[in-house]
Image 1 (tube, rainbow, N blue to C red):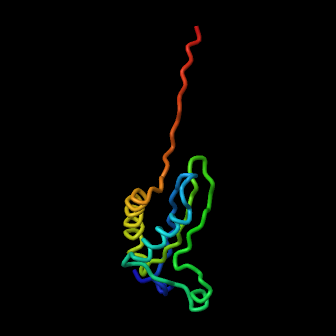
Image 2: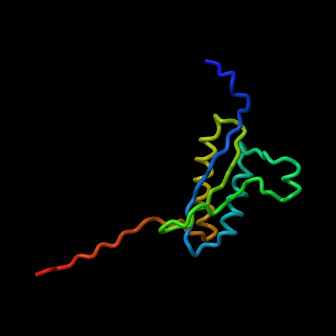
Image 3: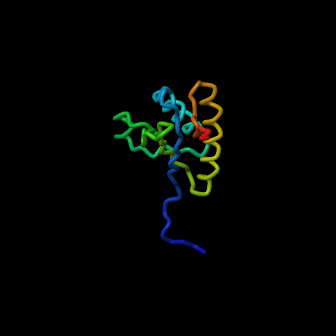
Length: 119
């Protein structure tokens, strides 16, 4: 099967990660950008004007203030769609390691249950 409509093989991964409310957002952003840019499948899709204006190769934005985390989203471009899934898996594993080393907490949901004795 040949799809003549696909002319561009690159793909953008939207990578979301939650960090604790007390975590350093700037540090988390910097780590996410550095990890993504080091990945062998990463490509920089910025044009010269964007580079001159300081637009980051990997934009990282706060997209949600969730109940237990601040949700960051990194837009990471991959050289080929067939490599995008593995790139995302690699980055998620690296995030766990790098954030732990940097002291950036990735929170998880907790639930407290209170039992009352009604006699």
